[in-house]
Structures are given as C-alpha cells and as structure tokens.
Length: 442
Image (cartoon, rainbow, N blue to C red; front, top):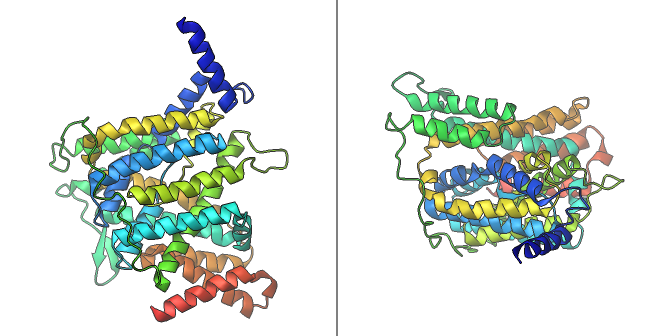
C-alpha cells in the first residue's frame, strides 16, 4: 500500500511545481536545494555578529535569521514557483547596524521599523506595477555604483572588524598589527583566501568551510570558545515584535526607509533576472514570468523579517548555485527552507564564530559586489564621475545613504551644468532635492 501512496505524493508534487514540465524531478530539486543552502548558510553565522554591533541579542538574531530565511523562501516557492532562496541580505545588515544605528543614532528597534516600512512601500510598488518606473528612472551607472559602493563599504567593515585596519589621527586609517602576537588579522586573511579558493573551485559550501576552518584554528589561541554543536534554539523574545515607530515623522527616517528600499529593489531585481536567466526561465522576450509574485514574496520577506527581528530579507544570488545543480522550480526553494529550519538547532556552532572569521566571509562578499564597477559605462564623464563619487563616498563616510545622496546630487548638478537636461529625469531631480534638504537640515 505504501508504494501507491508514494507515487500519488510524487504526482501531487509534480503537478504543484511543474517538475515534468520543467524537465526536473524530486531528486534533482533536492540536490539543488542542498547546494543553494550550503552556499548561503554562512548568513546564520555572520548576521548575528553584524547585528550585535547594533546592540541586538545574538541568539535571538540567529533564530530570526533562520526563521526569516525559511518562511520567506517558502513564500517564494509557493507564490512564484522559482528556485530562489531568501535570507537577511549582506550589505543591508551592515547598513542597518553601522549607518542607521551607529551613524544616525537610531535604536535597533527604530531601525526595524524602517525596514518594515520599506517592505510595505515595496509591496505597494509591486502591487501597482510602479517598480519598473522607479528602476528605469535611475541612471544605469548609479545602479552599478550603488552595488559596488555597498561592496566597498562591506570591505572596510570587514577589515576593521578583523583589525587589519585601525583608526589613525594622522591618516584616518592605517594598517593594524599583523605580527605573531596578533593572530586574528592573519586568520581573517587566511579564511578569506580559503573562501575565495574554494568558491573558485566550485565547492558549494566553500564559504561555510572557510568560516569554520579559521574559527577552529582560533581555539588553541584562545580566540574562539567552543560550547557544543547542537541545542534547542535560543529565545526569539528579545527581538520579536520590537518595532519602534517613534521617529517615523522625521526626514532622516524617510531617508533611511528610502535607502533600505532602494538597495533592496535593485539587489532583488538583479538577483531575479540573473538566476532565472541561468535557469532558462525567461520568456522569448527576455521577461520574467510571475515577476509580480516573486516581488510580492520579497516585499513580504522584508516585513516578516523586521517583525521577528532582523534586517532586510531579500533574494540571494547564491541561488544560482542550485540552478547550476539542476534546480528549476519552487521545490528547490522548499528544500532550502527546510534546511534553514533544521539550522535552528545549531546555535552553539554559530555562537562560536569570532568576528575575524565572519569578517573573512564579509570581505569575500564585498569582492563579489564590487564587480559592479566593471559593468559601468566609462565613455561619458558626466555618467561615471557621479557613479565614482557614489561608490567611494559609501566607505569613506561610513554611510550607504550618504553615498547614494551624494551620487544623486552630483549627477543632477553635473547634467544641468553640462547642458544635458534630457538626462536629468524628474525622478532623479526629485531624489537629489530630497538629499539636499536632508544634508542641509542635518
């Protein structure tokens, strides 16, 4: 009796996700889901370390990270039927902790409220099909510069956390001590080299292996503390439903919400197009079927993640690894979500990861994001000059929002002075004006 039941179950799954139609099967989707999970599971180790800088409880953030990834990936699977996984985004978590909380002096509860509001606006843009207008209105070079600038911002955070660079009253920053008496920076660079090398070799869990390897090397040096591997999940209560909207009427709050939204919209659009293109899921016109459903899943993810206590949850480009392994449907995402639920029981392992180890992964992600500079158009100085200002300003001002603002302002002013009025679209001019007001009032 069990065999017909199994066959019936497989038929239901096949119909629900269109496995036969997409030339795949349950086994292939499982392998793809496992592959995607292994390439992005590093986030459950890194996200708590980054958000701890904002004063958040690491155990609660660990649980929120796993739950946000699982629930949001389930949403993508059943709403859009795409092999795309979601989790708290790198870059967005750094912006949350280092710019909004430490820079703008928000509490992390107020920052969560801004994340939630950005998700609501994203949902509205998606529902009324305004997202395409917003994306098309932003100059192409600025889009790439923002991605690259976030990468450079992550790089300086990673180097500072590992004490490879330190503050200097004479030169702002300088090299930290790299001798035998200070092994943490060396271990960070070793971890970075391991992560890059294993990703270059196509090892699915390369980032995770690099993090754990240098964490273990820190044990005999007293840099890492081992408290076990498996346990019941920590409590979520320190971050659950802790949103604080008390600053929602301030101009700075609008800037923060816009920055979260802006980064998420373009990061998500790039991920969706890139992953589905590799999977051969774009239609004959190069458009993405069920785009609206995929974007609704992403906007839900941002809101849900904020409610339980983490920075913006978004689609992961690492999903491409699962596509390369044969994943073609939402069943791949279902398996990824199940793995994230299983990860809830490995909190002690995540808790042992020191800052220098997570910094190694952060530095690798920074390198990947900075590739956006190569895609910029370098034949028009009125285009690339504002883009360079955008990318450089983010790490040097220690603020993603400031970099975006200076980029829009310089773009608008340069185009006007150069007599290129047709390039200065109304949306760009409006955003430039908003940032001028923000910088003027402080």
